[in-house]
Length: 88
Image (cartoon, rainbow, N blue to C red):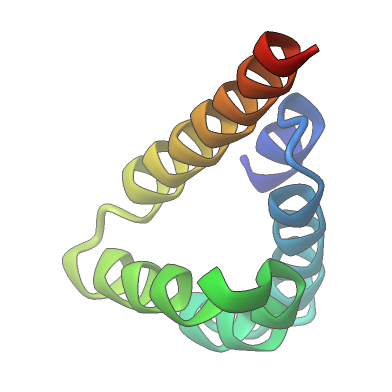
């Protein structure tokens, strides 16, 4: 679920997005509308992410695609931390 993904990620923007999206879904918004409303928390990546959520909604693979995106953001975060450690 979105709540579990939000708890598991260390990427603060993704966590904020997932929490906002969950809130929107709880209020009865369809996935794409919920993603659009929560997308500002993702900064510049918001548009791309929302487009992928729309694709997930249209194909019925919502959970699979959102989980894949979460893994990608987590890897990006881990890579950034590794780069910082290398510099230090």
